[in-house]
Image (tube, rainbow, N blue to C red; front, side, top):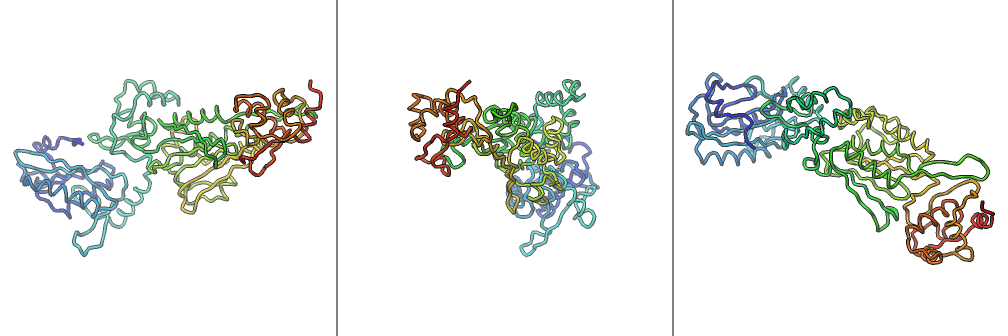
Amino acid sequence: MPLPIDIPALLTGTLVESERMEFKEGWNPEAAVHTLCAFANDFHNLGGGYLVIGVGEKGGHAVMPPTGLAPGQIDLIQKEGLNLGHSALQPYYHPIMEPLVVDGRHILILWAPGGPSRPYKARLSLGKSSTDWGYFIRKGSNTVRAKGHDEHELLGLANTVPFDDRINQRASLADLDLGLIRTFLRAIGSDLYRTSAKMDFEALCRQMQIVDGPPEATFPRNVGLLFFNEEPFRFFPQAQIDVVYFPDGAGGDRFEEKIFRGPLDRMLREALAFIQSRFLGERVIKYSDRAEAERFFNFPYEALEEALANAVYHRGYDVREPIEVRISPEEIVVVNYPGPDRAVRLDQLRKGKAVPRRYRNRRIGDFLKELEITEGRSTGIPKILRAMKKNGSPPPQFEFDDEHSYFLLRLPVHSKERLAAKPEAEAAGQVTGEVTGEVTGEVKKLLEALYSKPLTRAEAQAALNLQSQANFRDRYLLPALGWELIERTIPDKPNSRLQKYRLIARGKAALESPQE
């Protein structure tokens, strides 16, 4: 990576040591490690700094021409610097090293941007017997050990920078897409949309707070890359939603998978639209003893929307695990990694009263809130509970382990419904009340085929002379099961190869009753 500033040109001027610049005539590994630690901690959020090796200083000014380094020394310093980044700094940290020739002399520039994992600490001494570590910061042109209030402030400052708001030094301003930014501004009705096309791009990004760093080294923040780059997964592996459908249940051998990627809001909307169109549906049950029909959804969309939006909001984008949506005829399961805040307890979640003390991705939450996808006020779980209750569905179930390494949210299917796409070996649900007088012609034919004896799925399909298994399942078998006109002969093992279907009393009554 090229240096963001022209050091040789600056050296010909009046370059002086400062909070972001230090000169060293020779290589002193211990002093260098302490200065690199200070630049990485970036105590005053100035963007790190530069350590220039091979240039002396007098009164804070660079002494020119430079003293320089022997050509063979350059390679040795770079190798030693690489090792020190692992052995003498925690977390490990490596500056960007750039050899240069100035006035015929070799010098080495160590560019140390503010680190993404601060606070950093360095070994106080590189002696073999030394085991002491300390935090270092810059004060003016000096590197000093942070103690007392300074150390406390450094630790507090670092702990308030969540992952989504950190700069990403593997990306550049060019990785942010103006079209996506303007689409977002228009969607939220921002006044900035009208002027964004003519604004300086960096100024626009700074106003939206999706970039940070000094002018010569501006980097996107992670939240900017997650929303305003077409391929966020290049920077955040597994930043995706995996939707997996198990038509025979979670233990079955068959499954269908679809992966959604892209900017977070688009990825979320596309995944929701896909699930809604393929797996969600309203059912209407009519009763002969009353005029009102019963209406419900197999899974209420509002609950699914909140569950998936919460997963996008709260997952860890530094964890290489996708959001998973597992769909079966019995349930929809949403899993994200890691789990909730340590302060959250399962009993609180079940009551809808869990309020995290810390939010993992505040900026992601802000953008989703502006897009009116989430409210960002710990209202997601209560909304899921209300949506499931309003639909007459069983309550959602929550799960995470003692380490809070994952979070699982389970939405059970409505007790009177099974997914219409489920294979013939599964029930369409339990329906209470009297049998409606509007049994379809297809269902009546199936009842007639089962009148004399139970049949397997294949036998019943053959008796009706039907070629399409899906047609038989969706129009004949599932409605008959759902209306409790037939039953399985092995109800505890719906996928058994010995499974058969038989007519029951309600089915016989429906078959014998006159049809209008």
